[in-house]
Length: 103
Image 1 (spheres, one colour):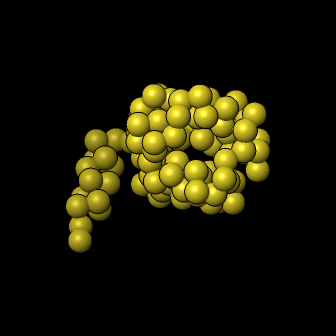
Image 2 (cartoon, rainbow, N blue to C red):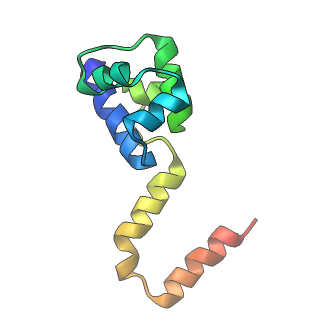
């Protein structure tokens, strides 16, 4: 858990564009404590993991390494589109937009 937690915490913070200070304000956890969690020198209690998960928009299971996916299906789809958009024709892009617009 220790290794996975601090790597996943760092990754989610980067994904959300959050600094330690911003995460501290969102979670009411001190910056020095967050620094220790990020370095892997301190392991958080479950209550703290929950605060991080809520602030970062992911599950506690994800932060703890129990989920293998990146958290949201939206993010996976967005990443795939960004990676492959250069290979799509204008028609294919419009087709994707139409599919997303359907109810």
